[in-house]
Amino acid sequence: MLASLLMTASKADAQVLVYKMDFAKSGRSINFDFYDQAFFVVDGLGGTGTFVVTYREGGRDFYLSSADSGELFFAVRPGAEKAVIRATAENGTAKSQYLLIGDLSSKISVSLRGQRVTLAVCPSLRGTALASDSEADVNFLASDGSIGFAGFANIKATLERTKTRNANKANQSVGEAVADLVTSLERQGIEDGSGTETGTET
Image 1 (cartoon, helix red, strand yellow):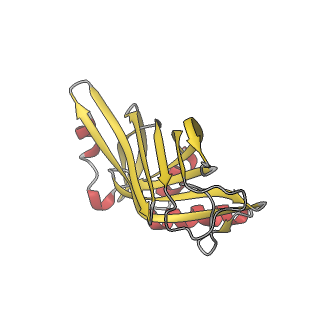
Image 2: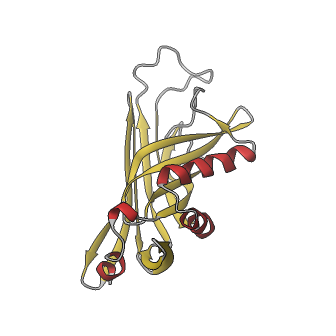
């Protein structure tokens, strides 16, 4: 089924999927906070995509965008077809990993070159994130005397059907869909956090 649903669209014409991710801390952790939410924008046929995450700091809301920071691929065997989102990030002594899996149990209809094309999609994925940092390169302790962090979070990713539909109706690329998403966040008063020092441990 997966092959038949995807063969009608070439990789160059792949449509865009927009997923929203919600996080909940899980298990044992120390000095650990996670992002409020995240969006993952990726080609409908898989490949690398862009994360846009939001967080709150000092009474203000911020977003960060990271291109080519995650991957969507498909794992298939007779009788089972799964979508997988994974990501690995490393920044100095900080490391994090995301892994989510879900069933290809739904379809969307999109327009390519004037023709309607049906794509198999995963309406929701669930998984886990883990992050840690020794902060061995930090010269000063935090005001509360803490240093280093480690923790886990459960993740649920849900296909944002309206955002996905609008992006495909406008024939947007991943980059264009991300730009629209960022504009929407800024209209909500969420600021670009790329020029700030964030204390969010992910």
